[in-house]
Image (cartoon, rainbow, N blue to C red; front, side, top):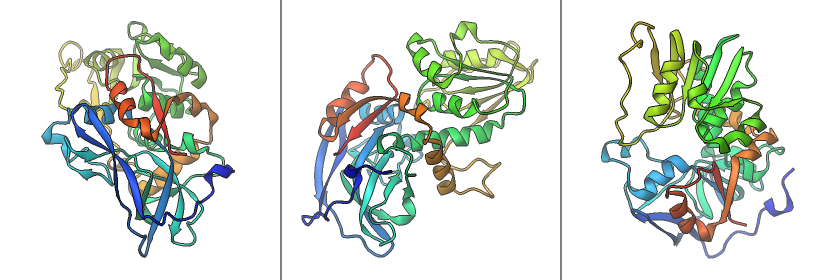
Length: 336
């Protein structure tokens, strides 16, 4: 059940809100703005937590989003344009304070930037189940990506599968695949520090050089040339690699020589912007997000929450996350 801290507060009579903006490459700040009253079909949400999606948000922070992909990377409630100044982000959990009466007091997930209060259409909100803690619920956007990936990958009974890259998305894919009737599933990452994560999931962690061969399916999530080459090399005859990585402006070299043609390998893209074709006729994006939130009732996902900061500390935290260093998973931003 929601904790007492999740109970609705009295509406903010000042009608202001604070939001995080990337104002220049490597620089961000918290800005104050007016907050409109909710109109018909809208809700005013007080944020409890948001999550930092490390891959895309550090690209935005560093100003490394190329113009040709800026439109594709646009977040649902983004303000400003990439590379900036821009208000960016899409992992927010809060409590409805005002608006449609049936929504007031409910905890919700929204694909909204880092902001302490916001007004959105109720159609943009998905209820957080009572058995999912608010901080864990920020992972819904990542798990939604993993759900779409598994739909795209379509693993079959007794398949031999590897997930290459043990970041947020790769680990989420592995978490979903562990419930499938596979004959083999491994998580591949060169970082031995991912052993705790893999152990919590109950999936073996192997180094790239130890990846098993003759695989039916590889899900590539490492966003590196080396990971892509490792995945292709491990596939058996007529195997498939599902590419989930976001490379931004990078043009990775793809090893299409050697045995690529002789083994009749397939590379297929997966991207969360549209529901997988295999489910599009029967599942909406809201259905997919609700499935992800239901999956987060599993406490194993707490291992994904590897850092936290207050909202006021977010500018310094994003600057730190954008620098080279140990790769954590999800940093939770606390607004309470």
